[in-house]
Length: 125
Length: 488
Image (cartoon, rainbow over the protein chains, first blue to last red):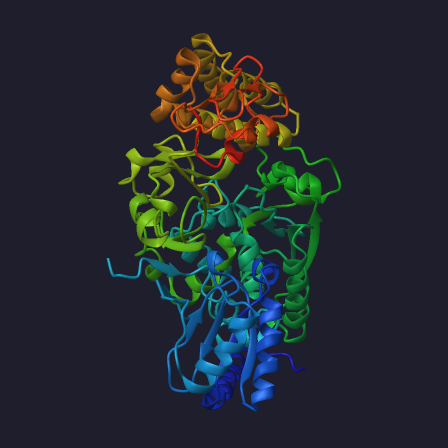
């Protein structure tokens, strides 16, 4: 991998990466929280269950892992971003609910219980 | 204040980016602050900006970060070190782990900035070995940052180089104290030493060293990207920015929160935390872990910042918040924390080693119903003396749970001593299990389950518990289907 040699290099790389990310927003994005606490409460199983359900329904979905989403009381948590919509975080997800989320929300856009409201302002650089 | 009470600065990326992919961090504005420092600012300007931001150490003591960096920059040395203190040890606090697992690059970036500012080329992350996932993600992050030229030789094509390594701690609470941490990093016993010299003058291998906490570091790239004047508008006069708290215990929304300094306790517990579960009354919250103290239902309007907490005999600490409701006994809570510090004291200085044991024994006597009024006075006296004489932060803050609970709940201590009662019904030695005559149907279940056979009574007749023989195990209370046994 080439080393970055200036702030200009970095800014260009960032712009490229943001463009790549934007190009992907025509597909749903599933972001599973996988910090120690989320893993302990079954986050990895949720990720696998959602991937399997997406495959069996023949959907085209991007997956990513992230760290702590801060909602310990509601782990495992999953954030789903549908094209053109704001991200929605679902809490208390087990493998059954993971499948339902794919069938209902990812495929049909139909909201399920367990949506965690956004109570913060995220500082973006 | 707007409806959204939380502002996420230190936790800005956790949960939003892939911590194992540096591109994800760069897309979120990562390493811009480091590039800006190296290309556009002198080290002195970086330190001035840090001072202007008003950022204070988030590990507990609250020392201004920019000032600390300025001290280290002032000493001449061929080698200087930047140390990240990731030895998170407070019971109920896990924000450092969350940040390292969710956004490791922000910490690496800030360490490199710190190195640039003080003129140091080496950094070490001291992390407890109990955090394997955080360690794994840190290692991946370091490797990726080196590949991209953001760590290692000639960062961003400049003549500034910075290398990072990781050292593992064995999870001793005292090693969160910076001088004990340095001893431990050098392979010696994790015992603190007397300051001065401060680490900024002679720390790791006797070289100028800055020791910064994970959360402090995680905020730095945001501060330097958006500017000190943006950051210092958030918070209070003396405490700028936001603080991450781990809010646990008897609270609905157990989790991590990041709120502006100066928020009231009421807002934290009832708005952000969602209140106390099962309709119970909020009683108190232990802030700052075993070194901190209790804020109580009387302190709901206290503004949470370094000075506000200190005024209540508590401290900011690393940000654990253990919420307690009406069912918690404050004497038992103090005893729990003193048990912890008694186990964790390194034993080097007498006030801490013997003092923690004596305070614990006194609290234990009180919870057993054997306390006297002299014990209460002695607790106050010992606490004050230990605070004044202990060597390091662990000992100086160890009596805080006692002093702060006595501030509001001295009546609870007195109830244990004078009335031999535990008002919250926690201290089993002071409880009585009794049969409610009207409810007892004489089913004999309680007598069968009693391990010491102290319950007597014939079938279909009211049963009686022999108080002298009862060991207060509570088995009868659990077994009774008719709510005919109560504890009081």
